[in-house]
Length: 98
Image 1 (cartoon, rainbow, N blue to C red):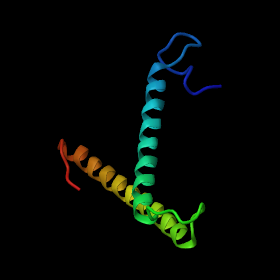
Image 2: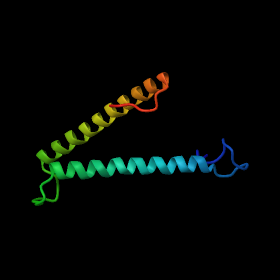
Image 3: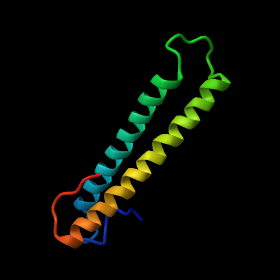
Image 4: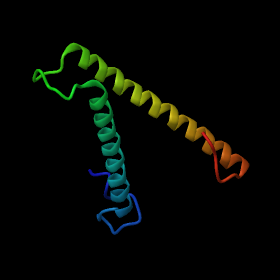
């Protein structure tokens, strides 16, 4: 059973266009995060002159740390934005600062 059908304002057994749009947006966001991680960590950790076909130990460790830091920062920013949004909603404000 697909999550894109049934369970919404759509014809019986039809595709829920709202859910399709949400899925497309999520794929776009995940792809964007992935591409930013690859670009950032590749530039930071891998020499432009390739000496071997595989990553060496230093490059592997650097990539691991880079990705972990990227996700940690992403998580902290998301938490900060959620708390700021909740505070703004509680006070009726329409803007917030990090």
